Image (tube, rainbow, N blue to C red; front, side, top):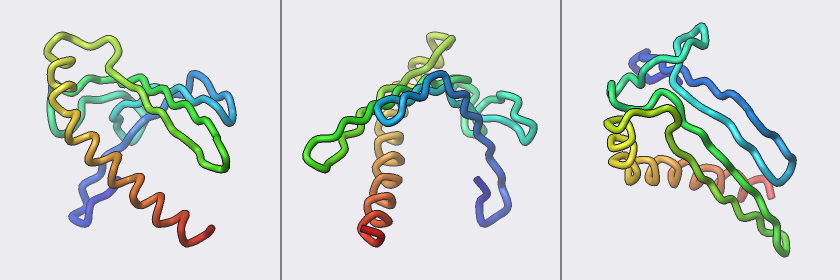
Length: 108
């Protein structure tokens, strides 16, 4: 991602399981431009790696997405910091899914 001011942030996704169309499992982290895992630019206490498990189910033409995720190999301090970020993450994911809804409404 690149901000209007030119600040860049890199992310890394390592896929562990892809079972289309039902399941996606991956570990994500912040990285440098060469894909080396690094600390989040906003906190030294944000966990280095987050395991994400997404499951998709379809019922009568509607897809339900269940997202579960959490730190792996984290210290107690990192776990506490992550827990404190839940509201911010809900807001971020919510905004992202709002954008997806708006996009899908245009093409469907």
